[in-house]
Image 1: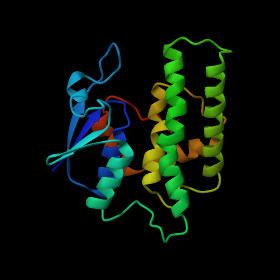
Image 2: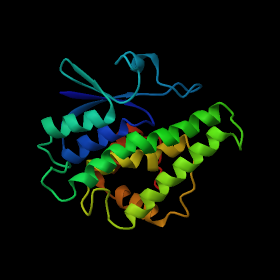
Image 3: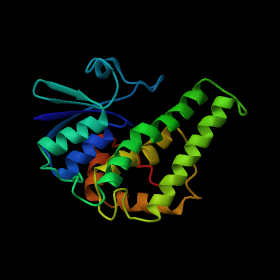
Length: 213
């Protein structure tokens, strides 16, 4: 049986959501963040040498990295569902957005969080560089969602599971006003109506309202 080790308010929500979408049997082990530091507790850090979320265990296997975990579960237990194959016309779009989430979107937003924690002031060249990168990323996402219903095209895929976190829950750490971004807001509404997403969030973070507005 797969155990999803879910750290509250973290990227591990992606793994819970995927399991719900694909009806993959799993056991959920929840961990609360330290109320002062907002970091993972010692028990979570002990799961994997990197000490970060997400982590799953599958028998003797311990696997980290949300992108790797999703690919593993889709290939081994999901019969390839929610992935896009190399012979499909939107394969490159799927790959781009699946990897854009953690390759570009998350680093730009995480850097903003760290800059805030370090109290870097407005006008600091690092802050300005991060702002430009973040704005460019959100503009690209807004454009894409004005063209198609989902990131890989007109059908929901694992690329959406990867991309949702920096558009939603990540805003608990890096605030962003979505009012000028109607296509992103419409997309978040569509995702919020998915029963599997609703179940995943209710199980993983029962005390938190999903950040879909």
